[in-house]
Image (cartoon, rainbow, N blue to C red; front, side, top):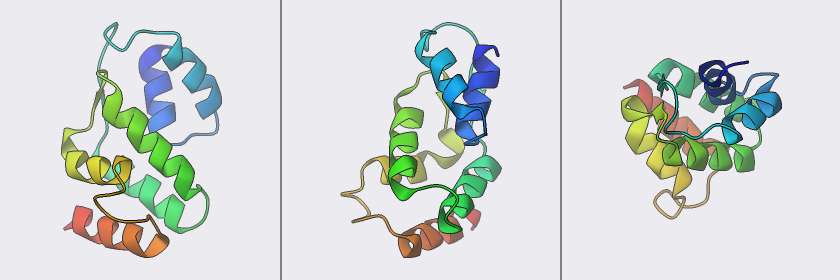
Amino acid sequence: MDKLDALDEFARFGDNRFEAISVITSTPDTQGGIYTLTQDVFCQVLQRVIDGEIDIDELELWANVVESRQDIDESAVEGAIYALSNNEQMGELSKSTLKKLLAVTLG
C-alpha cells in the first residue's frame, strides 16, 4: 500500500485502516502526493457514525488527524473538520449534532 492509498483508506475508515495508519505514520506528510478529502467521502463517514458503524470518539480522533496532516486537503469540508476536531465549537458530539452537521454539509 502506497501513501496515497493509505490516506484514502484512512479517510474512508476502510477495513485496512490500521495498515494504512502504519504506512501514514512511517511517511512524512511533506513527502509524496496530496489526498483530497471530498464532501462525498466526508458525508459517508458521518453517516457511518450516525448508523453506529464508527464510534464518535474515533470520529473525533480521525478529524484531528485529517486537520493536522499537510498531505490531506480537506478544504471542501474544512469548517466541518474544524468543528469535529474542536468539540468546544459544537459542544459534545452526539448523533443529533452529527445529523445537523451532515444536513449543513449537504446544503
